[in-house]
Image (tube, rainbow, N blue to C red; front, top):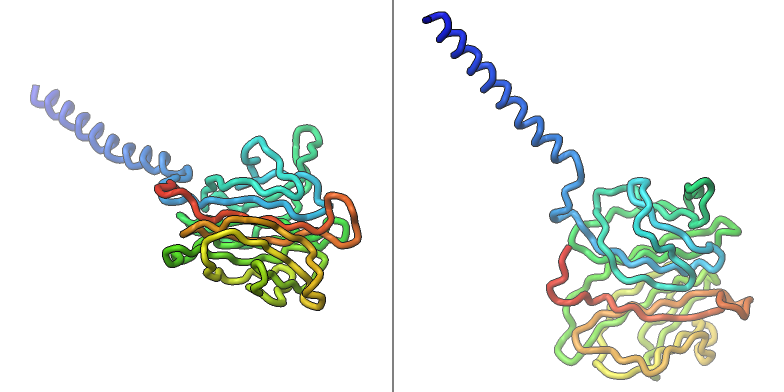
Length: 248
């Protein structure tokens, strides 16, 4: 009987030790996947490359979502995990169910709890495809005012001015440049974009746009001069202010 009790005690002790060892291992395995808590950013995609054709987004070599991104459209913010690297864009055209061509890999690192916009610009034909990543945060404007900034994403490689109504807001903004936000009084504006060397010739107007109190906006200019199709000069405005209580 004493031997049986001793054997039972040893068996129980062994099982206990094994259990203590197995539980941490299981817990460790459970954490091997990406933990979404506090690891997410928000990303807006904007295709402003005139000849790239539609593309898909890949994170950690896995296609994200079902939508492809077409010129010259902007797509609303969506969640991305900042640890799912690299972020790539690949041709939407598939061969045997695979998107074979990696067009660009985002060189920047995303930080959690931050909104970004990824502009894809340049020309595929001459190998000048490029990424422009904006961080879409800024201090709150004063009461009764909004904030505006300007991004030149046109591969025409012009230096540009942006005037709000008749007031010059930004001057000589080079290709791929991102200005700082500036405050403007909330209200309706005509946004007029012109080449710095020909400030009286508006290349792409945006008329009667309402800047709202407390909001942040990005104005961007895209396209080419030597075409009359959808690749011609154009401009658009993005709202960078997310709704109150937006989760990451």
